[in-house]
Length: 408
Ligand code: NDP
Image (cartoon, rainbow, N blue to C red; front, side):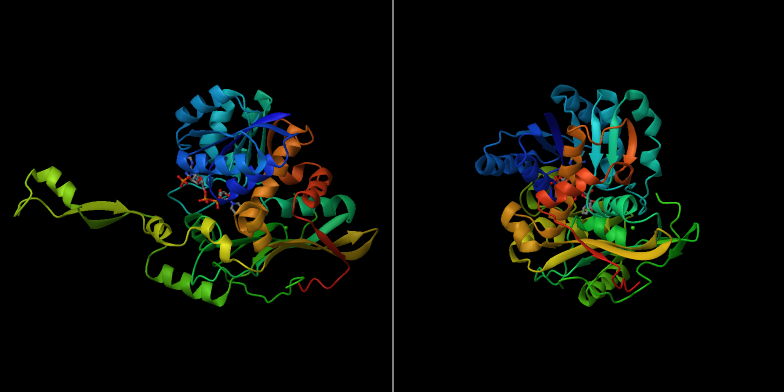
């Protein structure tokens, strides 16, 4: 039915690629392209062995529109799945426009030099995608992604008016490391050290990072004008918060460049001096600029390697209060995902799984013609029903509690 190009070969891309290969009727041709092609080749080998799929690979620097245009122009995918990093959203959207490709991602654009993310940069492309007759699907992971689709589903089937929306995101898993992030450490730490925002009575209220705490219980262990309040809650263990505090206090979460005096390797010194011994004139160090948070990423555990020893589950859902037929009702719709089950199926932990599966389903919705209007769209603008049906079939079943205590 369609040819997809996956950009990125990290945790999320790996899961999405497994799921793409599990649905060969929809995804007839697949290419994985990333900055480091050897990771794409290793992944393609695993996929070939497991599903018999012949996956093509390529090297691309997705920060370069020129390189992307070359790749997209030659492979001519029906859809580009951007599973690299939020920094690459705009270059990939630009290349899609120049080559006539449709686009999907899981995270909104964030400039490298400013820890701040919002959709306005990507919405600015709306008219160009519309005019080109191309579709861009934004934020098709779990959060954003499935939680937006849960909300659209609740609005379609269970409420005349949604008034209060709390998106609750819990990771009750244990990876048995002192400190590790569940997705790209640089992006993760930038996100959670930013100020918070929630919607109340027609305006955004700003909070300090992680200012509001509330204990909630989770089972088994948030485009709607009627909404009075919409908030997002995420669980963090005390140990994680203590480490994060230290990281911030010692300046390791900084995203500006600092000058670091790095030792030169002996052969580099030789190259400069041409002399092997007793050289006192050649400097033994060189001044380099490093971004502390990027350096920290290099020494933290790689989120892709957490899967093997990860136990427990994630639980993510929407707790909604509103009106139906003039009466107040509550509705809680959620998914629980086991880290171990995700690892056994894809070699990745639950957080990559809960993002990669929805990315594949979004791509499937596009290729089946169910979600394909020209323009730039967030997922809640499409019909939630076929997507919800696929969540149950593709490994992320969901559950509902009607008129229970929302605790919020
Ligand atoms: P990883 O860091 O594991 O993988 C990122 C991949 O992108 C790596 O393969 C990396 O290549 C590649 N990449 C980075 N820069 C470039 C570039 N300039 N050109 C080409 N390839 C590049 O991240 P995750 O898989 O954990 O996350 C992927 C995306 O999913 C992120 O945008 C993240 O924010 C989003 N996400 C969304 C969630 C949601 O619920 N909506 C939840 C979790 C994540 P290399 O291997 O060379 O470094």
